Length: 364
Image 1 (cartoon, rainbow, N blue to C red):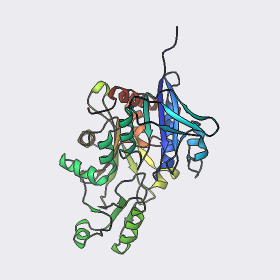
Image 2 (cartoon, rainbow, N blue to C red; image 1 turned 90 degrees about the vertical axis):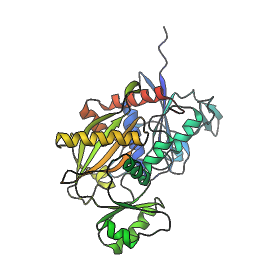
Image 3 (tube, helix red, strand yellow; image 1 turned 180 degrees about the vertical axis):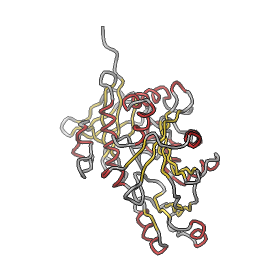
Image 4 (spheres, rainbow, N blue to C red; image 1 turned 45 degrees about the vertical axis):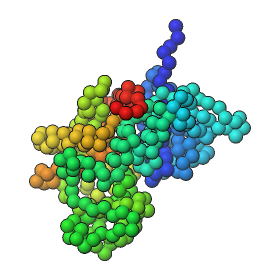
């Protein structure tokens, strides 16, 4: 009696964005969590230049070692590409010595890509063209959630509170009227980036231009947000099983102790202090979970998301942002929240793949 065929999963990671290293760490955790009796894994790394390679899948090479961040290079494996032909789901491998060969068809792709050229709808569009199911949000939701301007606009249209902000497109400066409206301090950030990269806290308007220049190294469109004083609370959302309604996790709180704000260093190199579940009154907890589900639905998300909020001393709730492919590293809050909810990391990964296969591609 032959054994049932394993589901072939292509884990795609690395990428061209500034979040390359964190994507590698997330991929390493997912690779370690997948049940080898159920899944055949094809690890595909993308270099910072955009070259696709068939990686080794060695999880030790995908971890942060002290202050050394992992990276995919052209030497990480053989060149590989995915055809956009929906009648062929093979990965095409190019070896200089052996020419071109094909791997068996891929059943589903797990695009563990953070930031531009991955979390922003680009790879999702390619996978839709190829007709290959994939984990996470569709093209529109990925693009809308990646762009903080449109996240705020869609959330506000749904009645979800957002804090005061201004958008600076390329070549535009902050007006005096906006300075008066926002007040100081403000946070200046790229509109389409994550992992706290390119963000500056500005306490003097004389420093604004420098902060905008830092953000524009990542994205020509910049957000200037009024600083909201309060607690930083997060919620994980998973697509419902068998087409059911999305589900919210318990909440987590990020404690900012010795730093002014939750920057890249604190997130990934030093390590922050967290409370899971967050210690909030029951009514506030329910409201944040409801806002999280409504944000997920308002942006037409699928698969998973992490939704971040500020809660003021007066109990006011403001949406900060939504991440459609949140960090999946061992220190990331999304898996921590679901573990505390009763769904451990391997079960979360398994559920994400199963819901992607059920959903397939195309309009829904």
